[in-house]
Structure formats: C-alpha cells, structure tokens
Length: 79
Image (tube, rainbow, N blue to C red; front, side):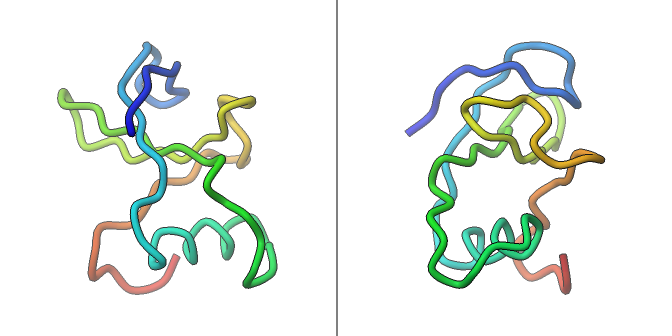
C-alpha cells in the first residue's frame, strides 16, 4: 500500500509505503528503541522515484526521528 505524504528530506509530497518485511520492521524498532513486539506498521518509508530517499516517518509526524533516518538498503549492515 502506498500513499502520498510530505517527506522531510525531499521537501515535497512523495509516495510512501509501509514496512514490507520483518527486516524493515526490525530496523524501525531498533531506530525508535522499541521492544521486539512493538507495532511499527504505522511508519512509512519514502519511495521517491526522483531520488533514493528511504526516509522513515509516521503517518502523524513528518520527522519522528531527530535527525531523520533512512531505511538501509537490503543487505546493508547495522542501522
């Protein structure tokens, strides 16, 4: 599922998607300091076609992480 939301990094409305697998949910839990069972599907990841953004936000706050953080590429080590 995608929806158009304002992106802090891109500075405009861009398409965003929810986390698509357990790896992405784990990254968000680690970045937010949440427990292993915390619900994180209310987070959205920028999938701008103009740039490789991947900035993480929630549906309610454009910048829930300060500084804004990006979803690492698949296979990237660490967070």
